[in-house]
Structures are given as structure tokens and as C-alpha cells.
Image (cartoon, rainbow, N blue to C red; front, side):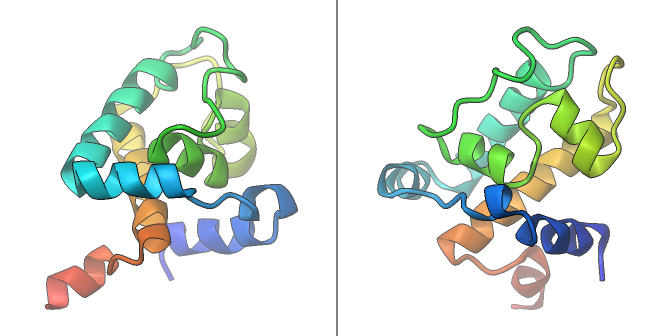
Length: 127
């Protein structure tokens, strides 16, 4: 079991986190733009809205809907620095490292892949 598998198991036990799903608009957006563009958006959103030591409007910087990455951030508890600390043990008050940012983006994209019915990275590498 990977660390991400453990995270998904813990998130599934949260009534709040487990209720998030991609709606028709977010699915259509993801289909139209493609996985690469959505991943690029995730990298940009995390770098701008979550990576700073003290993000502007922390706790309110991530909309609840409107983009697949926003929904994924709430579903995976990567929406604000306090959720990152509570769920992922990433301390507040310091800049996220490039490795932490990459890990968060990977987690978001795994969640989006699952929602979209895409194979996991492991399944894609076997094909």
C-alpha cells in the first residue's frame, strides 16, 4: 500500500471529504482540456494558492466548484494550509517544498483520474 492509498482510505472515512464528486461541468471541462492541461492547472494552483508560507485568504482560497482541481483539493484535504496540516502532517507557516507540491499535484490527479474513470498510473504503465 502506498502513502496515497492510505490517504484515500482515511479520506473515505470522512463524511465531508467523501461527498465530493466531479459535476457535469467539471467533467466536461476535464474532457475538453485533457489530462495534461488539468495537471498543469493543478501545478499552477498549488504553487500560487497553497505553497506560500502564508497564502492570501488561507482557508477561503479554494472555491468549492468550477474546476476539477478545486473539487479535488477539497476531496483530498489539499484546499488550505490547516487541512494540509491536519490530514497530511505538512506544517503551516513555511513554504511548501517542490517535492511536497509535486506530491499534492500527484494526489489531486489520482483523485481526478479515479473520478473520470481513467486507469491509475500503475495501470497505464503496464499497458
